[in-house]
Every structure is written in C-alpha cells, then in structure tokens.
Picture 1: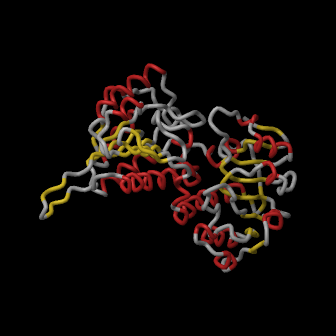
Picture 2: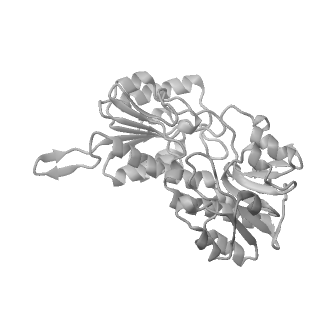
Picture 3: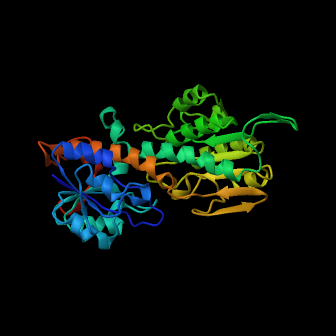
Length: 373
C-alpha cells in the first residue's frame, strides 16, 4: 500500500500525522511511504529523519498524493486540497464539522464524497477495547489537559504550590477542574503536581472515583446522575434545568478558586455553558479561567475562542488547538493512533475497506460517492 503524509496548512497546526518511528514500522511491514517536504518540520521532525527510515520525500502535496492508496494528515482538507486526492482512494484525518453543522452539509466532507473518496474521521473511533490504541481524542486530550494548566499557571497572579520562605508561608493556589474526562483528569494530575489544592466536578458517576484517586476533592456530588453517561463513555447533553443546577452549584465553589480549567464537552454538540458571567464577576481578582472547550464555544459564558482577555480582574483564556502547542509529543501520540488504524486497514499489505467491521464502518464518513452519516 502506498501511503502519503501531507503537510497541514491550517493556521497554527504544527502536528504531523505520522512520525519517523511510525513510518519505520509501516515501511518494515512492506508499505511505501511518501511525505510532503516539510510536513514534520513544525514538530521538529526533519525530512532527513523520514528518509532515514525508508520514506520518500516529495517536493509538494500533489507529488506526494499522486498514486497514493491512502492519504494521512491531521486536519480536514479544504475543498481545493481534496482535488489533490485521486478518485476512489482514501484519506484519514480529523474531519469533524463545526458544532451545529451536519456532516452532509459540510463543504469539505461533501467534496470528498463527490470525488469518490473513502474518508475516515479519526474522532469517530469507537470506544471499544480493541480500538483504544486508535483513540485520537483521548491522546490529544491528554496533551490539552496538561498544557491547559501550564497556560493558567503562567497567567496566574499567585504561585501554585505552598512555599515556606524567609518571607513567610505562601498557601497553595486553589484550582477547580470542570469535567473529569481524559483532559480533565490530566489537568487534575498536572495541577496537583504543581502543588495546587484541586477540586473537580463531572456529571458522570464513574468520574468521582477517578477524581478522588488523583487526590482531588469531588464537589457538588449531589448533582451526579447515574444516567449522565452515554454508551460510549461520554457525558450526555444536559437538560436546561440540569445545566442551571450545575451552574448554581459550581458558582459557590468558583468564588474561592484561583484557577478554573474547563473541559466539559459533548461530542458533536456545542460545549455546555456552565460558568456564567455573574460567577466570573464574583471570582477573586487575579484568578484565571482556561476554557479548553473553546473549540466548541466554551464552558464559560464569557469565553471568546482564540482570545485571552481580562474582565472584573479575572483572566479568561479560550485557547484553540492546544495539542498543537506541544507538537512533538502530540504528534508522537497521534502517529501511534494513526499507525494502528492504518495497520487495521491493511490486509496482506493492501488497503482493505470492510464497512461491516465495527471500527472501519464507524469511522468511514464517505464512501462510493455518499456521506454515510
């Protein structure tokens, strides 16, 4: 199978879909790998590293994609970039449309279908045991949860750990993590390592034990619901009444916090608004809110995706594509996910698309000219 690795030209995207280590595994299995020149440079992976493990470096995207059975990249291609793909071939990338837009209404997805491309959406990896090593959302959420705390700490007016100095004792900062999925749990662990006193909340009953195991305090436990988790392990969308109750309960906790990390998300939906403007107005001056849900609108009512600003003495951060700010390790983890899925698609060295397979079928959003969602 001929596999092309294309460079991502999306703004602020520094990751690459396959790293040299992953390429070495794939070339060792008999696959032919071609990479567009410079595709890994932003992740500090030079072309020579790819050549050293058997890949061919192409001068541009068109040359790399020519003759490829499968194209891999990080972000969705534009409608123009779709034209580089040969009809009837396949692509693997993050393809999720913006919240509120149906797959069939997305121009990029429609362009892939029109060209007869089989498109696999990395974010649609099913949450089953044999697909765990392909779970891109979890691997990248790990990076986001870690980096989100560092971003908050860098803007905080206070030090995170308790310090005993000649000038007296400094108490530890208080941090609240909203949402205890993969990103939230990593944020809890990171804030704890930095010395903060950490509290957390999640609507899912299973999250409470995980939060406590990391040494954090679980707050508003009376709002945890046994039916709040979907079959895939994600939180279901809350009713307006449930959201209001959560916002009210967390408002009481937020007033005492120095740092709040927001990670609440519902797949395919706008992020639930949990932290209100009124709550922010009552927070301590010098506090920081890092809204890792900014990509889908944000958990904080005041969040402006992609912006950092101050209101009522509180810094509100809405960072986008946080994993890309740690490009080397984000790419390393992403590449392992992609490589495992590519191996899943390969039967005796050839690209094999079996839509009856529970992994392949779940991830294929276009095939034979149709959008499959």
